[in-house]
Length: 54
Image 1 (cartoon, rainbow, N blue to C red):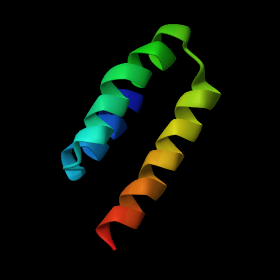
Image 2 (image 1 turned 30 degrees about the vertical axis):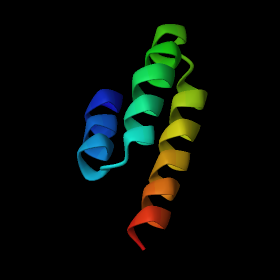
Image 3 (image 1 turned 60 degrees about the vertical axis):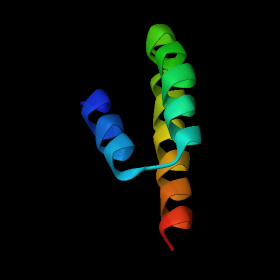
């Protein structure tokens, strides 16, 4: 479920930094299974996407 949402975010985003963020931080979050952190990460990423698309 989480991976599907994050993949959707990646598909929408074209900036290299977001790929780096997903490539570096996501595996760490998933490895630690810190659901609260993953949720916050998703929210902040979505907010970032909203800002870049405006």
